[in-house]
Image 1: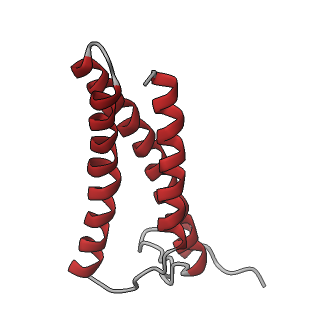
Image 2: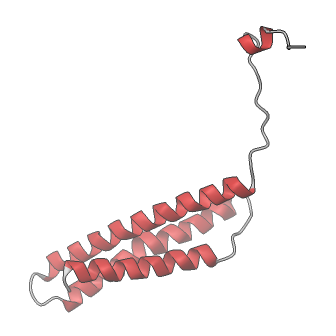
Length: 120
């Protein structure tokens, strides 16, 4: 497989995986349960998918098999990292939009805004 084919196939697989993760219902737990869900997401997206591309690159190449496997792994890893970072940023934006911060800003005791009288 050429590097362009690996790039295109990894984009297709990456978009399918990211779409699957975005359409899946989100768990709204706390603590370790949230961490374990994130670990599964990282394990599949960053380890399993690039490893499969590396194995396929090794199996389908006719010469320089090891270098083809390494380059297939690297290309698919870079594509998956890019797509997963974009999806993580999107999820954070959605979380901030749906659940805005409830913290009230406070003024420090020596703040000039605290010392000014209110206009009447």
